[in-house]
Image (tube, rainbow, N blue to C red):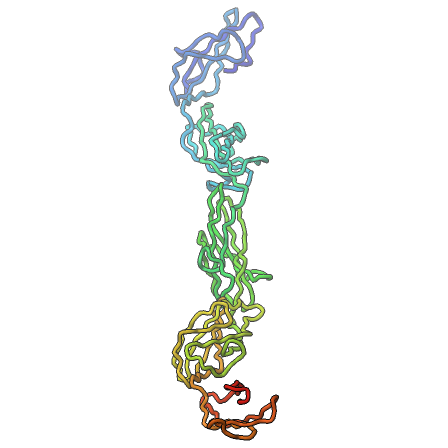
Length: 463
């Protein structure tokens, strides 16, 4: 109690106290009474048996050495309340409860605390647990916020990934208190770590070329964050060297989206742009290495029958050879990645089905059974990186496996005679001879050339 204003002009003042019911008039009538040891302003009465949730008042009887007694003076009503605050809730953040945040402004809000006679005040403090440790320190001690039910403070230096928890202390008007502790918010000030991104719809396979016309697909490996989970991905399609051709679209945690209703232009490159957001709201953006769109088949080249320049006939009936050149996929095509060849005859029969020549520009196919006097055609298919192709067929080669026919005679200019019954010709020169022949023919491929030969018989006098 605080006792002030009592005085006397004569001698010592004696003070006696009486505990009354809160509804009683101010008087000196109470079985619970006693004498104060002195007139000190602040006094404490002990040994009482008061009832919880009851109302009392204290009456003071003052008298001097002459026995004069003054009128009773009573205190205001005293309510006995031994209960502590009950219930309530506390949330990390200024609104709904946060689990993660990027800001170093630490905020909390609370409410729902129940007391018999109202809350007298609130205090709050901040606890901090360092990332990957169980070490908790008091970042801020209890600070009074009166009857405010929210509070915040910015801290300049915090370890990334640390967890802040808030303790709110609620006081009754009798001075008793209870604490509410939040479940904590992780402070994540760093964005996610990017995964690898792939053009195309197969994760782990990054394509460089495609013949897409109105749809674009991409996949990527999972983005990671050591401090908090990934909350969502957004993505868009960009034309290389220009801007976005789509807006960013939220795809939740999908990592293999496809954008449709596009207009992809041949010989242009397009890229996927991906943003990954963590639960704290920070994001990392990466872009794919782009894919070249190719809608055009390779341009035709020339196919030659034979090993070198083009031939029209051959006598070999177990092998066909061909070579080709000048196939191209243009300056901004996807490039020719493979050649295939097929051999057919003049009746349309397939002698050799499509066979890969890889990147070679020639082939020789052995082990065949080719028909005499039959035309065979080699068709070459040039295939680019997106699977588009062009076919070119050579002008054909005719198989002539029979030798030329000789039905005429060979004559040497000179004097014809016989030596021992064998026909011979005498010539006057040792350096030249004139020979004529007729009657050679070939019905299939014609005569291409003649070769001649002199050889020595039994004597140097004979030719």
